[in-house]
Length: 190
Figure 1 (cartoon, rainbow, N blue to C red):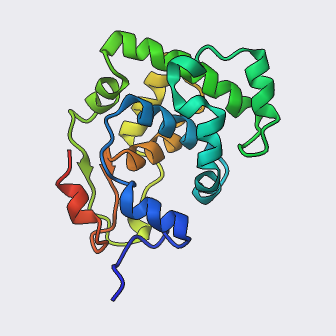
Figure 2 (figure 1 turned 90 degrees about the vertical axis):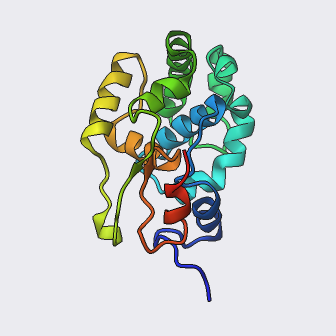
C-alpha cells in the first residue's frame, strides 16, 4: 500500500520533494538562501515549474553562494537574462542579487541568516494540524510581520505569501496534513 501524502504532491519531482525536503527544518545558510531565491522565483508560477528548473538555477546562480551572487555585475545579469534554464524575469533576477546583498547584511548583524529567520519561531517549528488541503493558509500574521521586516532590510520578492511558502519549505512550519506519513516525523524535528 502506498504511503498517504499531502495531495499536492502528484508529479514524481513533487513527490520526491515532499517526501525528502518539504517541512524538514533547514539551518544551513546556503540552503536557506536557495529557498529564498527559488520561492521568490515561483511567484505567479507552480512549484513544479521551479523544481524542474532547480538544477539549472543552481548552475546559473553559483550554487546559491550569497557572497558570490551579491557581487554579480551587469554582465552576470545579462547572462542570467539569456539563460533559458531559469525564469527570465528581469525583476526576479534583479531581486536575487539584491537579496544576496541584504542576506549578507543580515548575516553580519545576526551571525547567520538561520539565527535571524528561526528567531521568529524561537528555534522551534510551528506544528499545524491540517486535516485537509482546505485547512491550508497562504499567509499568516507571522509571515506578514516577517515580510515587513525583510522589506525594511532591503529584500525584494518577500511578500507574506512567498515567505509562508518558504517557512513551509524550510520546516519553520509543519503543514503536512495529519494523515500524511511525513507529518509525524517532521513534528519531531528541530
